[in-house]
Length: 118
Length: 458
Image (cartoon, each protein chain N blue to C red):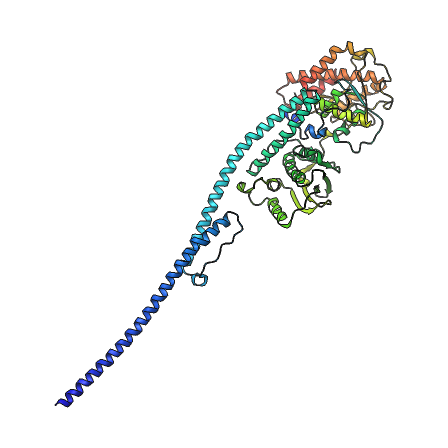
């Protein structure tokens, strides 16, 4: 579904993450929700990080959604997100614990859908 | 009787003597003249021999070396004054001209065939690099393990450099840069160039600019910037930074690349300026070893696409400042799909602590949410319109249909909204799939329509 142009992105992931592949914290899965925290200035952030913070200003977004908006691999998005958590620009929360068992099927379907899309 | 006879005999003898004397005198005169002529001819012959030997032994070898690109001047004829204007002199000149011409022809022929061969080889390498990039992108999507990702990023980086090398060589061989791209923000163009060089971590972009490069110029500009950045990082200490700055002007934008390396001397600047002019064709057999292709590539591409590159100023750090000037004709507004804005409208209590409200068990219940735009990849985007950000969605109809549910959604607790968001996500996925199955052949715009329609209805 993803067009070749997206996979042939101009800015390669190693530049997006500054060559890092390991998130500074291991707290993210596909449905972890992230929200912008406060109004920290965006100066000094890379365009992708700035975009994430702006996206998350409106409310909680899942990691998968952020990755979809940025057209970046989820693993790369996690590196950026954990940087932003470190710098205090965003906060995270796990998807609601009660909804998890019931929604397992839904989440699986979201995951499948994502895989089909990406 | 004897007396007159004697007189007559004497007179006769005298006459004979006089005649003989005259004849002898004339003879001597003639001989003298002929001797002079013979000497002149012998002198001519000697000069010709000398001139010919000089031509074969000295002048032609010198001409050969000169045509080979060595700093040699062809010496003058030995007897220049004697030679000028004579048929022999003209013939000597004709030999030199013919020699020059045949060498030049052979060189052009060799250059052309080398370029053709190299171009087709590079095309293969380029397409392999492209294929590999696609494969790597796929793997990056698939693998979540940081160890694997680290390896994939390294491979991606190396592949980007490989592709750049092949592309630059192909350009020198008269090929086009290939790869159609969308119009892209200038900062992304620069970062695209940074992606393709070895020391990418040493480059920093120090200023911002809100302008994009038109689609046809993206790839050439990326390639030129990559070559200049590569030069800058290669010719400066590994512990120094390479600085990229933008300067808007009334007729375009200048991109300045400053390194803290060694400045170029006058001769190097002259060579660079000559190559950057892009007027003379590049001799593929003379790019040196290691190949110095950067300026040549920049010259060819800037001449072809109508921008300018110069390297004749010093950077503030004592190194070289390379300036790429893009005229307004190659610039455009930043594409709307890159405009920043929140994915969802701000909550009334956006600053409240996350997780304050317990998740609602009925979260899965379908909530009318305006899902309007899709990403370029076909992913549905939730983009609700609020008073704070009116008309930020790229599509007006979607914004309109989103206005009504917005009031209700905004009043709900955050957890419920996020759950509704997940529901919307799932619906988007379903309709996206359905659209891709039913309208696979319709092209992206038709699919886009189908997506947004399906979403706003549910």
